[in-house]
Length: 140
Figure 1 (spheres, rainbow, N blue to C red):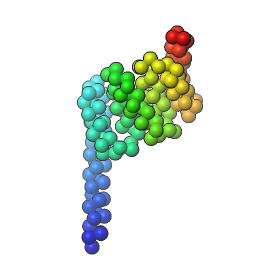
Figure 2: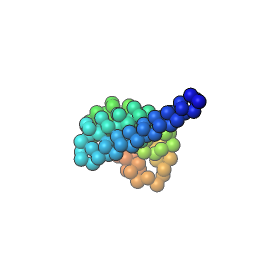
Figure 3: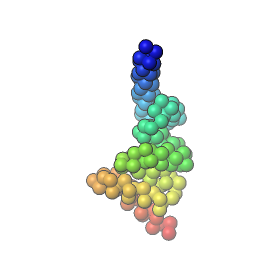
Figure 4: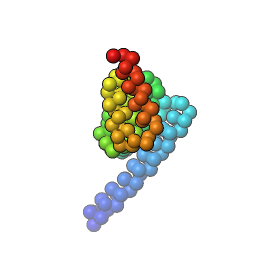
């Protein structure tokens, strides 16, 4: 009997965690839309606590850190995102953008190229790759 109750309790706990996650994700998105990146980071951080394996939250938080010129934090989250979803072109876009912010154009170009290989029709990745290569040429 206790086993059945523990399964039910676990199911309820998981449902509440999912509801919290979705609410935090939504509040993070609203904060981004208002340009309040600090609040968005707080919401996304709490969402990550609910679901540590959700690559989208790391991507979103990386985006916010990048807008606050926090290159190393943006890179850390972008790398975590790419590790969680190595098949997601947007993860590599985030990695590349963080490297661009850090003026590491070689690694930025590599990241954009890796993303572009996953989605050769992605114009944002193509444009970012071109920009990174041009930055490489200017600095070398």
